[in-house]
Image 1 (cartoon, rainbow, N blue to C red):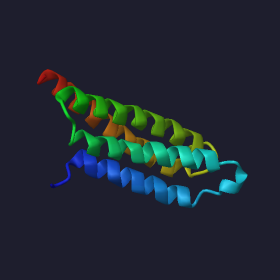
Image 2: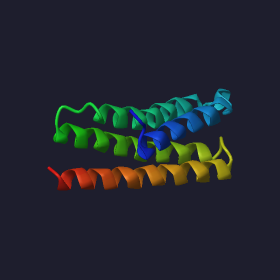
Image 3: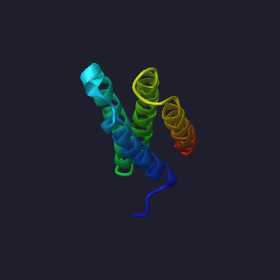
Length: 116
C-alpha cells in the first residue's frame, strides 16, 4: 500500500522529533519531556496507521480523533522543549509541521463524517 501524504508527514515528524530529542541533554531534568514528546509524536502516525484497519467508519473517525489529540499534545511538548532545550528555529519548524498535520487530520475527519 502506498503511504498517503498524511501518513508520510506523520512518520517524518516522528523521526525528526526522535532525532532532535537524541540531542537534548536529558541530565538537566528534561528526560520526562523527551519521553513524552516521543510518545505523543509517534502515536500520531500509529493511530493514522490503525485507522486503515478500522472496523467501521466510526472506528476510523475515532482513530483520527486520537491522532488529532496526540498532535495537539505534541505541539505542547514542542513548546516546552522550545523554551529551553531546543533552538527556537527547530521548535518553529516542528510546530509548523504539526500544524499542517493537524489541519490534514481535521479535514480528513470532516470528510469522513460527511460520508457516514
